[in-house]
Structures are given as C-alpha cells and as structure tokens.
Image 1 (cartoon, rainbow, N blue to C red):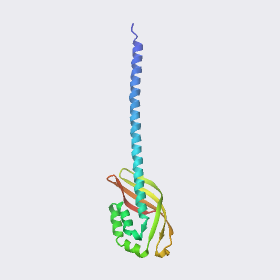
Image 2 (spheres, rainbow, N blue to C red; image 1 turned 90 degrees about the vertical axis):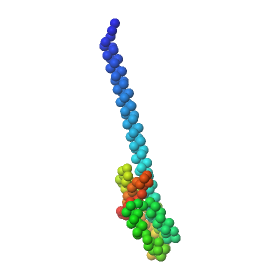
Image 3 (cartoon, one colour; image 1 turned 90 degrees about the horizontal axis):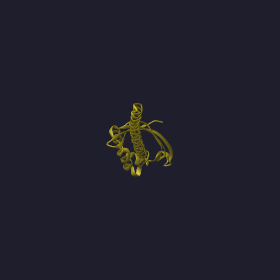
Image 4 (cartoon, rainbow, N blue to C red; image 1 turned 135 degrees about the vertical axis):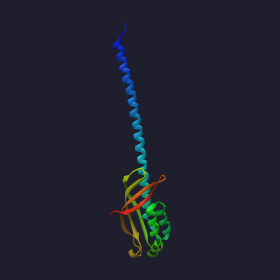
Length: 167
C-alpha cells in the first residue's frame, strides 16, 4: 500500500529542513563577516587614536635643552604638506627656544575620532599642560589646547597630514 500523501509531506519537510540549514549557514557566515569588519574597524580606530595621541604628545612637549629631539619627534609622525611646513617653520626654532629658555610640557587628556575611512581620519585632541620661558619669568603657566589632527594611512602607519588649533 502506497501512501502518496505521506511521501509528499516527508519530501516537503526534508526540503524545508534543507532550506533552513542553508539559511542558517548564510546567517552564521554573515555574522562572522560583520564581526570581522567590526573588529578591523575598531582596530583601525585604535591605531588612529594612538598615532594622534603620540603626535600631539610630541607637539606639546618641547624642551629647549633637547630642542632638536622635540622637533624630530613631531617630524617623525608628519607627512605631506604638514611635514614640509613643519620642517620649514622649525629651521630657526631651536635658536628661539634656546634664547627664550622655553619648556612646554603637556599631556593628552582625551582624543576622539571625528571621521575615518580606510586611509584617512580626523581626530580632535584635548591637551593640558604648562609653558615656562623668559617671558613668564621661567614660571610654568597653564596651557590647554584643542587640536584637530588629520591623518593618512601610509603603508599601514598613520601619519599626521595636518594640525589645526580649534579652540
């Protein structure tokens, strides 16, 4: 005795189970890709923030007794027009820093990515510190800066392409 109705039901159930397995596999694959993308993006944001922090820490820490070291630290993280402008503007800086006995010390309080894509980013950085020189009678005076840093990815390394004081 044949039961054609039962066979059709079994085929439909098997087909539905197969479709469910395929659909579930696709969802698992998509979820895995989404997590990998999110992880890569989070790592990129971390790299961008670390590069911006490092550059601005160098930028707000200048000591006339180690002026060339201070300048070189900023230049190391610079690229493009910013590197050229910085290089040009620092030619006489060592002499000026030494004459004024200038010491600027600071730290990054916070930094946040404003915009980012796969090869460029903008970061706002807030700093706090002091500056002491002959015009302050060599007494530290408080200085806070808000700085916008534009960065570009050069072969896996984030470099500063622009620095702008924003407030």
